[in-house]
Image (cartoon, rainbow, N blue to C red; front, side, top):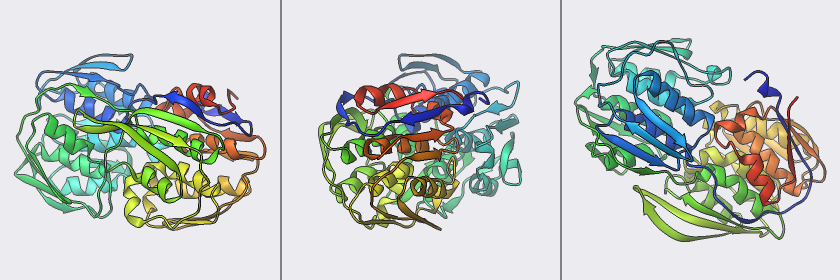
Length: 439
């Protein structure tokens, strides 16, 4: 990746977003389809799979543990499940690249295996905290070594796991899912209590594969020793990827764009709720349920936005979408205030500081706080910003070009391929004036 890291975007000012498009498949669901399909009994057929680097890292890891996986080809993947205890020792450390989801969920699943594994990632992932999964897994009896709470992780196999009751200290779908996967291998019933709702793709997919799991409000209970039965999985388009086009259309006059077959899981629609509170013109149609996941077509037409106090209960429902929401706030009339989002400081980058720094360079009054940001809406200027290798920061500043007064140069954009490999193509055909350069 070192040569690729010099990739940069050059965005010319102006433009509008129009037409219809389908963004790539949901990253969270793509990860989980591989993980659960691999340890299910039977053959799982996946359509709409995200062929981005993060999801492909998960796929490769399970191939290295002896699972036969065909594809991906045009979003189709066929997984020949090996059952709960059919994974085999990989020859080398499993390299999960930039994917925090892969590392955190796999640490729970691998804690229940009878072989040792080493999990590693790229330089960005190596900085991210892993104690939030290591500590509760240790309470279950897992033995996981780390480098001061960071990668690489040395997961020791062959240890008996025991169910625990665990209250998550902060809302995190990754930690919750990690413990659910470990709970499948634990003796007894593992109970997880969430402080606020987070994405529930794991719970939905486990139930869809006939695994005994109970959800009662903010309490999830899973019993060890069950079986997963293979099923067909249709991955909806990723609302996180759709967000960049939603915000772009909301801030650029004369925009009118429709995003097809987008996942609108109620634990993921914070961005829709927040943009509507800001005055965005968003309508949903063709609502349906596919594979247990609700989907819809989302149409966004330009309307002037206003600054708001973002409701704290919406924060976990939009945690990955805030870089783009900050762009909407920068283009809104008045002040937008975000609190309760300290989780943003430990994503692929410190997204609070990175976005505040970039917005300031572009002439916006943006003040980072410990758990959020205060943004005074204004006129986006021009300048050179650093995405710090964070795919969502890179794409967010790209759409800012729709309302910019001059050229925006965005550095270190190679990691966009982790979640949205055809972003430049779709954005350009929709109306964003964007070039991608090496060096």
